[in-house]
Image (cartoon, rainbow, N blue to C red; front, side, top):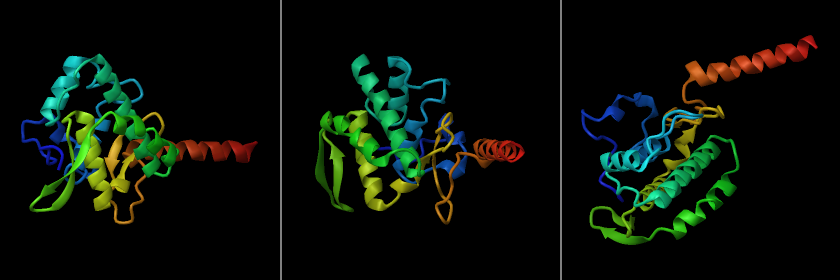
Length: 196
């Protein structure tokens, strides 16, 4: 694996208070948490400043951003991942989102290494946060867990969650909020169409 993150950071970690059903397996949980470092549409951003980004990265076993340019790239990477997760949920343009991943691949150095217990694995050579997260994405694709990491279908939310449902059909971060709002909106729209 590309980072020491194993999905749990200990009882003192504030992130462990998040609801269990959203948690992704293994290192993919770090990708989910990374995408959720900003609360859309205009909520707080844990990568808002160099100091905040440094604290978040270090608390999750990642190397911090080096400068403002690197921090801007880290935020862009987060939103490209969110687009991919939105595509995993049947929304957006998956091929175009994967294409937008090219500059991030070009700016990192990844290499194959041998893990005696597991065989070949992709590891970051530059130890930056983007390289570590890319290695996790790659591994999750190999394991078949990547398609279940999704972004909520509600455009103003797009919270990242892991779909643990038996038939992989979860579309909303929460049926009680985003799902019900979308259903109510569709119902009102149908009623207006019927009454018109």
